[in-house]
Amino acid sequence: MKITFLGTSGSMITADRVNISILIDTDLLLDAGEGVTQRLLQMNHDLNEIKRICITHFHQDHVSGLPGLIWTMWQNERKLPLEIIGPEGIQDFTISLLELMNTPLHALTFDLNFTEIIGGSMIDDAISAIESDHQIQSMAYRIHAEASCICYSGDTRPNERIENLSGGCDVLIHEASFPNEMEELAHKYGHSTPGDAGKLAKKAGIKEALVLIHWPEKYFKEKASLIAQARTFFDGKIIVPSDLDVIHL
Image 1 (tube, one colour):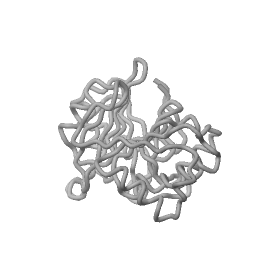
Image 2 (image 1 turned 60 degrees about the vertical axis):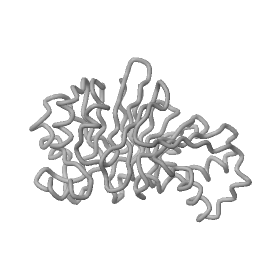
Image 3 (image 1 turned 30 degrees about the horizontal axis):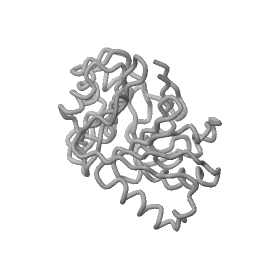
Image 4 (image 1 turned 180 degrees about the horizontal axis):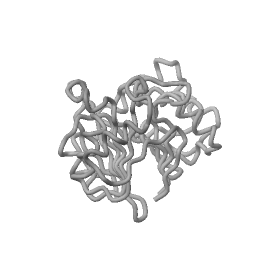
């Protein structure tokens, strides 16, 4: 499995980091934050290879790049259908976004197919999902490919559902939106700290690495501080990726 971190930033983009989006191998996207299309084009990725997009929730930093990605696929005369997976309401939400931006849906050259998740479910042999614990309905995903397994938390407070979903995975990709000393505020707004992620990784028995994303530079000036805060609870490998960094499993 190949994991490419297209965007790693929290709700604020910076000169070097765009909003959250993760490419699994060549055909699956996890979230589609602002900047996703440009990042894909920067790495010369063929947009036709993307077959599915899993959206965690409807906050702008996780979906604002979706209309532009669909528009660019249309401009490139895509023919293959695109499946969009997400929480209940994903179809109405996506169509509304496209209509608000005056996207001529009748002229799209490919079909948009939608899979709505209610509570938690196994989408197929490759993708499972469970509801996390955020300000609005949000999903966490478990992805299987070949002999590898990853879990992506999306935005969430610490909770046992994600611990169970990620149990025994090779890699846990977990948000770290606030430093440990701001744990109370993090949980109030449906987010986690590096320490929370470290605790969960230990309980879940993560085999290869804990990956910390969705961190704001106004709180963490150096990646070393995130690693140190997670290291208090998890003694395995901890990675804080930059945009376009790649992990191979």
